[in-house]
Image: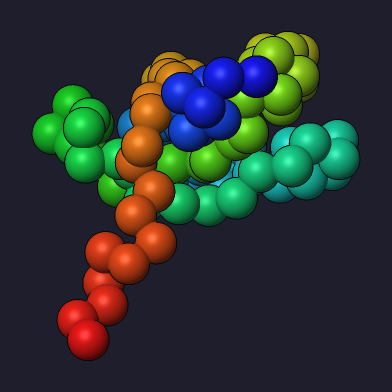
Length: 92
């Protein structure tokens, strides 16, 4: 795995937070690792919902298959690099 691919995270995007919470529950019930995260700044403005689900690359295919099988509403699943900034909100 290259260093660049290690920095890729997949974001599941939604039209509203209710869809996001429902998808989170579906993925949790299926045992697919995910976490609620703010929508990435790179796509803000495309959707009104500021919520996304964050996936590791190795879970993206399983998450898509699970959400599709359950008929879950989501806008897209996008791979984006370097969206996590550990010290973004630290000022000292």
